[in-house]
Image 1 (cartoon, one colour):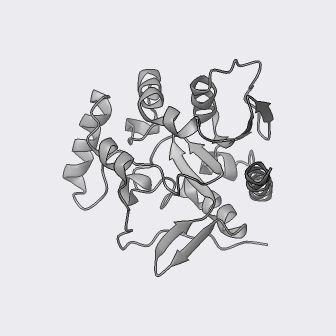
Image 2 (cartoon, helix red, strand yellow):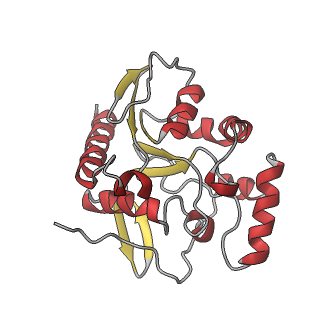
Image 3 (cartoon, rainbow, N blue to C red):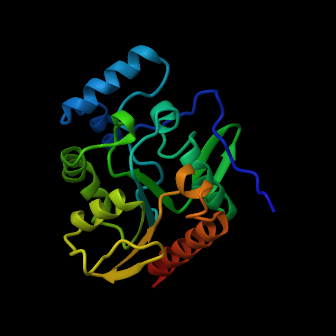
Length: 225
């Protein structure tokens, strides 16, 4: 059965800027990305066009890590995964399990925090290795270290999480549906919910929604345990 998928409205989304978000907004550590942001700002002055901060409460038990903002998605809305085709399935899964609510066009997360391995829109949707490392050391690590349950979406996010937590590839291999329990954390891995993966059947919607359910349950268990 075809499920409806929440889509971001064309109207503006209200983004709450905490201290981290304000600090990230002025980040120019990656010259290529900063220059590309400036180009996008000239093209679409009403879009976010800045580093995209984490979305969701800091004390959320589940952290989900994606790749980078999409041009018409997070780069427009200022919220990770909100507004692009790669976010459709994730938003559907979160809504199915009560972790996403949309009120008057404004989305709210409950019990989940979303962040990207790279906070800025990269040219061609491909950050380079130095940019991934820079963002990990500057911003991502501070998101990873307090969390006991982390789900990475796609190989780039998986590798950045692994390196950020100083685990070896043998301890934490990339494989869809893999679960590693290391250093008091539960680390889950999924293929990225991009159209390339969903349309080719590499990642079925039901499989992904079930994985999100498992991740939420594991996170809730770790908080109550």
